[in-house]
Image (cartoon, rainbow, N blue to C red):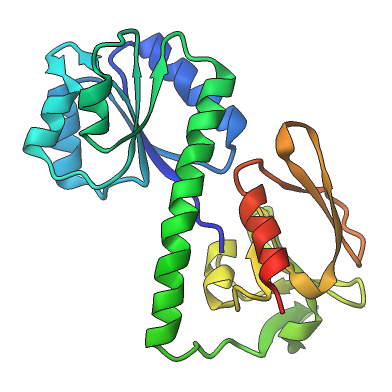
Amino acid sequence: MCAMLRVVIIEDNYEAAQGLKNMLLDVMPEVKIQGVLHSVAHAIEWFHIHKHPDLILMDIRLPDGDSFSIFEHCKIEAPVIFITAYDNFIEDAFENNGIDYIFKPIERNKLVHALKKYEGLRLHFENKYNKLLEYMISPPDYPSRFIIKRGREFQAAKTSDVVCFFSKMKIVFIKTNDGREHITDQGSLGEAAEKLDPKKFFKVNRKFIVNIDYVKRFIILEFSKLLVELTVPMDEAIIVSQFTAPQFKKWIEDYN
C-alpha cells in the first residue's frame, strides 16, 4: 500500500518556504507537510515533541546557526534533502542524513529528481523489510466481505466483487462489478486500506483504492503520471502521481 509521505520543511525565509511548499504540493499532491520550521531552536523544540517525518527539506543557513547543529541536539533518522545557495557544505550534508543537495533558487526538475531518489531508496529498503516480515509472521486474515448500505438496509458485499473503494464528500463508497455504488461502514479510505490484502488492492491516491482484478489498463500522462482505467467505468478519472507510479507498476508486475 502506498503511504502518504510526511515532510518537514526547515527554511527561515517565509517567501522561500511558501514557494517550496507550493512546489512540493504541485509535484506531489498526496504529500502531508507536518511543519515549516524557521530556525535551529524552533527545529530542535519541534523534533523533541513531535513524531518525526519521512523526509526533511532543510535549508543550511538559518538565523541562529547552521542547520547541522540540529543533529547535535536531536536524534533524527529521517533522510534530508539539503537546500542552500552555498556549495561549501556538501561534505557536511552527506554526513548528516543527506540524500541530495539542491542549490537555490530551486528548480522544479531538481526537486523532482531529489524526490525520486528518496522514493527509490525508500522502496529498496521497504521491500527488504517486507520480505523479512512476511517470512517471520503468518499472513493476516483479510475480510471476505464488507458491509454496504442499500436504502434502509445493510447487506454484505463480497470483497472479490469490489472494483474499487472511493471517497466522496468524506464518505467511503465501493463500486461493485455490477456497476453499482454503495455506501460502506468504513470511517475513512485509510481505514479500509488497512483491512485489505495489499497484493489485491492498491491505494493509488487520496480518493481511490483499486482491485487489481479490475484494472483494465493504465496510460502514461505528462510528468510520468498514470491514468488508470478499470473494467467498470468510473465517473472520475483515476490518476496516479509520478511518485506513486513506480510502486503501482511494481504492484501490477509482482501480482501472481
